[in-house]
Length: 338
Figure 1 (cartoon, rainbow, N blue to C red):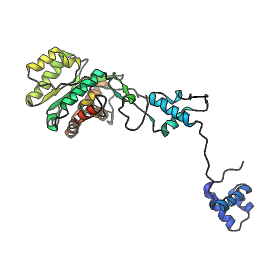
Figure 2: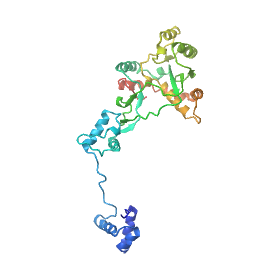
Figure 3: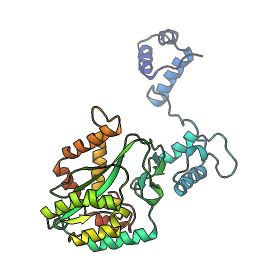
Figure 4: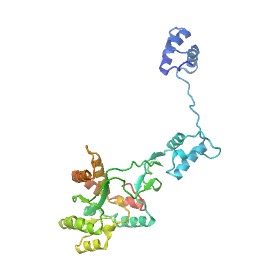
C-alpha cells in the first residue's frame, strides 16, 4: 500500500503538473501512485483546490438516546464511574467503552473532579446556621473587627491523595450532589495547634500535646492566652466552636466569672470561621518549604515559624470576608464557597 500523500505535497504536485511534467514523473517525484496524481488533478478541476474532500469522520457508536441516558445516569449518581456506565438502554452494545462514556460526558459539560470535602449537615444544622446568619448578617465590618477568631487544627505529615472524582458542571462545586462528607484526619504523625486571629492582632500558636479536654483547654489555652489577650483588648469578643472542650460547664463558668464575652456559634459550620482559611494557608506554607518537615518535631517548629511569617494584611483580608453570612442565607444553611 502506498503511503498517504501529505497535505503540503498537494500544491507541489499540482505545480509540477502546471509546469508541464508528465503524470508519471510527478508520481515518482512525490513517491505516490499515478492514480493519486490523476485524482489530484480531477479534484482541482471540480473543486478549485487540492485539499482533501471533507470526511464524515469515524461514525459514533452511540445514538442520541444513549447519549441522553449516559448523561442522565451520571446526573443522578455523580459518583458513578465511567467504567460502570457502559450498559445502555435497549440492545446491549459491547462496543461502547469507558472512554466513549467520558467523551459524551465531556460534550455535555461534565468533567471528573475531586469533590469538595465538607461536614455532614442535618436539617437541624442547616436551621441553626440560618438563624445565626439572620442574626448577624447586618453586622458591619467594624463589628467583625472586634471578634477574636480561635480554633484548633491538626496537621499531618502524610495524607491520602483523595483520588475520588465527581462529575459536575460549572457553578456546581458546592452543591449537595458534588460534596463529599468527611469527618476524619489523615494518617501518619500529626501535630495539633491552637491559634487566634483578629483584624489587627493574633495570638501565639500553641502546640497541644495529646488530646485537648475541658481542663487543658481552660488551663493551657484560656487562662494564659485568651484571658490575657482580652484583658489587653477589653472590647473584643471571643469566638470558638461547639467542641466538647469549649462548651463544658467548667469552661462556661470560667469565662463567665472573668466577664469574657463569647460569640454564639452554630454547630458544624467551619466554613463560617475565617481562621479555617488561615489553617489552609499555614499548611501550604509548611509544605512549600525548601526542606519539608520529616518528623513531628520538625513539623511543630515549621508551623510556629510560618505562623509568624503570615502577614497581618492576609489575616485582615480574611476577617473582612465575613459577608459570607449572606451566602449562608442564599444556600439555606448549606455549604458555601468560603
